[in-house]
Image 1 (cartoon, rainbow, N blue to C red):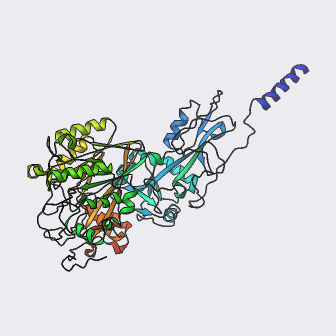
Image 2 (image 1 turned 90 degrees about the vertical axis):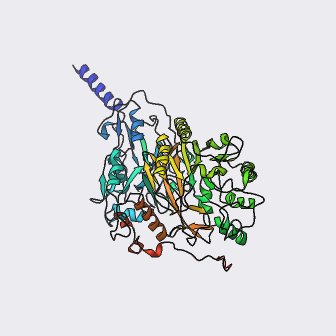
Length: 607
């Protein structure tokens, strides 16, 4: 009996010491702190071991298959990673040997995933930027926020993650919405805002920058961005680790494309270039344009060695440009040139061929026109950071402009063949290209911001065929925009470089206002649009709009596009304008560009 008792005691002691190897390990805790851009320091080389690409970390799996606990803060991708390990998931953290959880930044931390989120609002939102301090004060309940107390929308897991990072939000400042309903809820309750993971961005969201920093821009600085969090795999046996996606944001998968409106380096624009220098028109937009990975220019007229000297009072609408002016386009960083313009044939076949040969010599691809009809109709393919992008365009003005059109043995613009365009876009879409379609469309004598019926039909046909982006290059005065299915259509951008200042016969009030659209493509998917707004000066030089000009311009066109139901003259302040100071009332006529006396009558060219 004593012998049996002794053996039993030894066995019990052995099981206690050897059989429960994790029981005596201390639990690790993660501290939470309020939002602070200095305290909530984001990923650096000293914090974690990561690579620049969104890869996984392969490490040997313990054959014992320990139990697994998943933090409620985890992004869906990381949760799916963990579930793929085939371990038993337990509800209580204390019962698990392996934990996947939120991680505060810690020097030397291993097996960490870095996750980037974005602050977003419905696309027709005037506000562009918020400070980290404003976001902090709103989260803590110390301010009404930029949308007059509208709660910050987010999925439950995102609330859990940011509560762990910043502390619990004040009562009522956050509203939990199922992830698959978030976009619809936000659009139905404008003004509204939300936080979403970077991988959930899509074009109907507008990404709001924080202190000028945004994950959809080329100069994004994750270390200064408060919406970057970290997650980790933690186990009490250092030999245990698993595959976990390292990050959801990789700058080497991002491409930005800027589309612009009318370029015609003629008349008053050319006169300014001769007087003040060929590069003058681009001086105020050069930096923004050069930062884009792909800059599109729609040059409507030929470069011709025999082009006469510019005449700002020219009445005949037959145009050409001095070949020297090409230096302006290369200086602002042009990467692809659209040649759908109906003035492309104004100086005959020789001038058209000279222009195309110039582009070829400079190594600049072109589309929407060519040396013959077969060349003119072909899409141009560009690849950048793994993104495959196809440009295709045509001139839709019909028989009136046959002089400009390419033929079997004649250079020129491609006259729209909608059946061909539709089939080609379907083919490109099925091959995995992001398709950008542009038109040189009919121009309204009244510079109407609203498309006519045929413009709606043909632009939407391209979207229905699979074009991600459809853009009108013809409009001298801006036109409206819309989402059609998953596609973004902008019916007309307005001028870029052309001398219309509002003092010409019949020119629209506000014709000086210009759009340029920057599209963001990530991992071969169109995910976002940033609208660039410029104002034409000196008959030649677009400059970035002031804040007042920009907000009134955006508000005006969001109304015209049908996204806001009231009118700037109705006296009813749109709920979107809650984000604007009272001094930025949209019906302020002083902010509408008006006719500008021509400087050419006195030759007093302003600086």
